[in-house]
Image 1 (tube, rainbow, N blue to C red):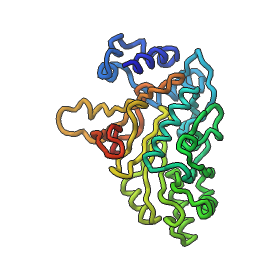
Image 2 (spheres, helix red, strand yellow; image 1 turned 90 degrees about the horizontal axis):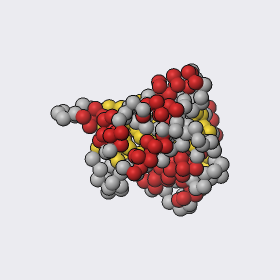
Image 3 (cartoon, helix red, strand yellow; image 1 turned 120 degrees about the horizontal axis):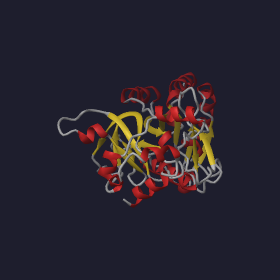
Image 4 (cartoon, rainbow, N blue to C red; image 1 turned 30 degrees about the vertical axis):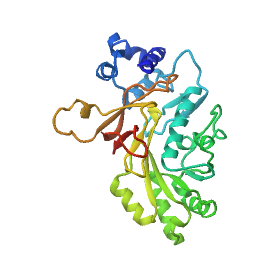
Amino acid sequence: MRKLKQLIGQASAAPFYQRKLAMISAGASSSLKAFTQKAPTTTLEELIAEKRATGDPYSSRWNKDRAPLVVFQLEYDSETSLYIGLGREELAGYAEALRRCWSLLGLRRGDGVGIFDYGTSPVSYLASSAFTPYLRRGAADALGCVVICNDGGANMSRRAVEIIKYVRPRILFLRSDCLHPFALEVEKESISLSDYTGALVAVENEAVLSTADREAYEKRLAVRIYRMLRIDAAMFLAVECPRCRLLHTWQDLFLVESPAQDNNEGANPGPTPLVITNWFAKSCPAIRYVSQVKATLEPAGCPRGPKDVRIAA
């Protein structure tokens, strides 16, 4: 409740949320249940419309009393570009989410981590303080891993294959849209990928590789593949657990809702859009953001993270 009240108070300094929160009663911050019932949601379409109307690159979500330290363009296929600003608190919280993803996957001190993604992806810019100004500790810094970066364009798949043959990362993070060209290059080289890396992690923004596609690529590449979900507009990360094969995320960093599932008193309604509130994003808040990812929330209890939020997508 302390986090919720602080978030609402700080979000009120951002014009976009100032207007939204003015429509709810003070009782919305009396409990999490009241908040999820009374606080309005935010959609990508709203953020795009706000950017067009105001010209504000942050869609008026930035706390007007602060200045962003680092700015990244969000990866959305929209006619107008959206951006996100990060202060020290956002950088620290977001990097902690990535560290936990890495830790859940079993990465430890001395492990090599390959990243085949764009520099504007949080998987890249949160990996090391050497990559991003004002980031005190990236995931690699916190865990003692060694990062090997390669840009993530699909046409650079051949170079990526050559690099991993020499550096042999413990895990390779790979954009999902690069899986097919990457697999083609592996097949051309006639190599066994498991000789060079322990696993691949397929990463997408507001989408998750289907279970069927994951299994098909696992057979094709003869290596374990895990899925990672980014929801960039909400600064959200979740990763597939090697033990339970569900996506894990953390309730002290994010409030994750599946509203139709939560409000349904009868049969399971099936996958519904995930709604994300970010607890650490206070300079550029993300309150009840409706993602494009349909999923169900599963009970906690995985041995790898007994209290983790678990998502079936």
